[in-house]
Length: 413
Picture 1 (cartoon, one colour):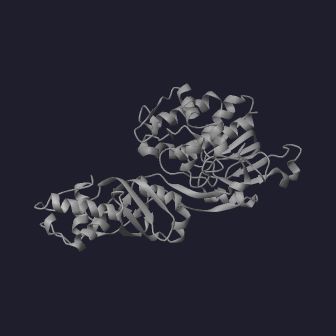
Picture 2: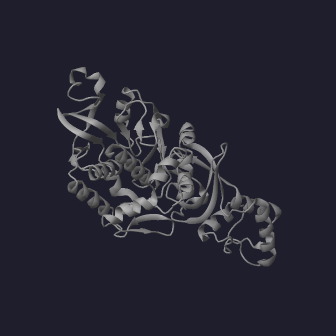
Picture 3: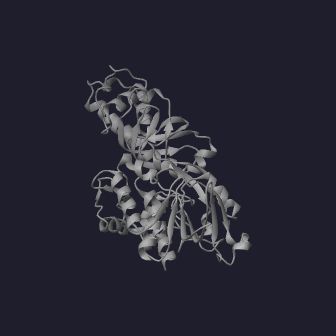
């Protein structure tokens, strides 16, 4: 039996952040990370296309929580303890300068996730955190079920891997979306909210977006028909359908609902954020003002040219149709394509290499002042192992840093 004061299961963002902060705040504690892979911090490595989207430039807790489809209410208190500004200060004190991009995402100035990884690894060495790789956890038991060891280890935990058994007083689970660990936590009596994918792109086969991948409509509104789900933002046409923030937000906030529909549903897109009636009025004016010009070649509403042309053709016109020749039906068809175009979604795709899951330890079973289990004293959670997830833009990492820091503070004290 290898004894430690604190064991962290999971060598990802939350695991390393918790370990470093505990060891720094209370150097007397023996802290170890158990990582199942041959190296840790893999999600950090691929985040933000390899640049690591550390957090997001939102500095008001009440605004920050709006980016969390699950966990919004629970994170308000924690964000008052540790949030974006604290994250920036933490990294900058350790020589990692962050920058804010136009869309609010924050990255290391180096534009490389390796900067964050190197920071964590060097801090772990500096503060004597032991990182044990290839340690896949096979069992976790609360000490109360190990009566023969009670004298040795009061109210602690025993963690088994293929090769070793570890005992500790304080246990932190920071394994992200790991079904095996969720099963072990269920064995300890915790409820796991059914995991479903979040942050995914939509598969759409449609003549209106065929052969125009890479086209971006900068500000659209998207609704999922038959639900209350809607979002707004940039929309990207891909080789297989739609992506970008407008879609990713919908996938996050609709994760549970869209899973129930087996990812087959209809969306309605307003490409110009005007009402059908207002759009029709504009088109009638254009019919008069641009009478002799071809509709196909006269891109309007700041839309990308290729998208405009596709929507014109879908409105029962040909490339030669002039504005003056538009009949009532064609005007209404074009207004409908611009303001309420319906597309059939038939499946989903992972967004880049980043995979986020909605689901995890039920939030009612966690004390959010400390991130400690309400069922087992000295059992803590950090990161996506709990039923908290966010939209894209650095928010999932901020949840990891916040939870890990609060756990560290609670254990250190």
